Amino acid sequence: DWNGDLGWVYNSFYTDLGCWQWLAGYNSDLTSYMNNVKAGGTLEDQMYYALGLVMKGFYYQQYTEAFGMIPFTEASDSSITLPKYDDQLTIYKGIIADLDEAIAIIGSGTEAGSGFGILRENDVIFGGNMQHWKQAANSLKLRIALRAHGGVGEDFSATAASEAIASGVLADVDAMFEGFADETNIWGGSSSYGDVWHNFAGSQWKTTEAMIDILRENNDPRLSLMAKPAVGGTMTILKPTAGEGVALIDKHVAYVKNMLDKAGLVLGETLDNGDYTWTETSADLTITMPENTHFLGMPSRLSAKMKGYMPDYMFSDPADIITQKTNEGKPLFPTVVMASADSHFMIAEAIVKGLANGDAGTYYQLGLEKAMAVWNTVPSGEFSASNMGSLTGTMEEKLEKIATQRWLVNYTNGYEGWSIVRDTGYPAACVITSDDDDIVSFAGEMNGKQAQRLRYGTGTYSSNGANVNAAVSAQGPDLMTTKLWFAK
Image (cartoon, rainbow, N blue to C red; front, top):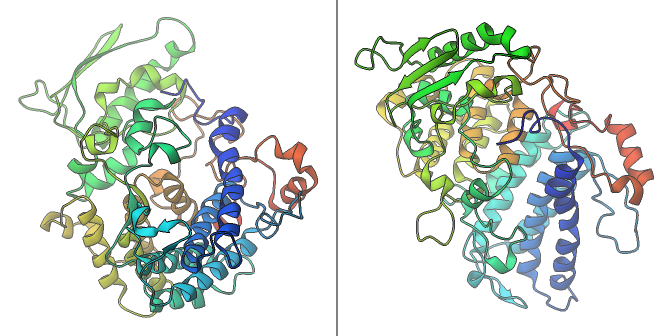
């Protein structure tokens, strides 16, 4: 686990190494690839070039939505050593132009292969099917259109959305992959989501309260597939005897009790007539839950002062398929690049927002079916009768349902899930702010606010200072709380 507030306080080492350096650095590899496969390149191949344009789109979408203004138009120009930082409107329009070029190149083609070999032998996502890459390009185009919609100066979202839908998005095939071959993996022994859960600092995390509550409250059949019941058993929490925690005992104990009640657990005198028992003395608090029975998500952004009240066994781990390591011969849950379910949900969103024509409810239902299929299940009768089971309500309520389902289907794609929350405000439980540092972390520059972006790498201030400072002047302070263009 992270120590105290480290997960919420800016740390230049982790931001530089884990985020900025690899995102900013990937452009050099991408540029080298594109130069090799473009017309006149050493490994000239039109289809591979189109594939590169699609990958470039996915890359820059993630890059700009993490930091905001970044080098784009001048980033791959070898004659420019200090590229300017472009605004998100320029970047989004540039991504769509690249995707349009890729879509036109692919046309009705189905295979690629010459300079780098036959694509189907190396493609871990679509097995070399270029029509699926074309559909992925259209899905990404639709994603960009929806993300940019309503931004200051934006004038292309309706056209881009309708074009993407008409051309054909990923409707039946998912863009997902299980892991990387060792020779292509920059992270060494962490080739899959499960490897990260076991190996990285801050790993072995619990499932979040927001996800568990949404699934449980709507009788979602994915609950037992996405998470494991809490280990439970008898858990004794020792009350502090010194320091500031003594004055907070009653407040913290009340929070734990409210958390259990909110999760729908019933207090009983014994486990025969309740979901948990509660025994409190002046020295400690003992909670007993049946083993491996109840699903309980851990609240996010808890203050370090609460740590002693949150025993691991009280909360649900991700399902085994999520945390499974590679190379052990067991099923792995794939990393999500673009789910077909998300395509259907995005079409529903475009219709609700007036950017496209059609029956939003029908596409929402298709999205639910595809989202459930990822977990080898189907919408149950209980789920269909729940609030999330159909696209009803006001316009805002419909958008909340769509955003919530999009967030769920992007499980293992944390960057996209974060973008959905910042763009839509949903799921509301993921918009975590704080005015009480005794419970929810108030630490660091965020000062209780929601994280909106990552800070630029420290090295760029010395290597390209004038341009990064110009970006900060235009975009706002280089802080995690500065809202990006698409989220304003």
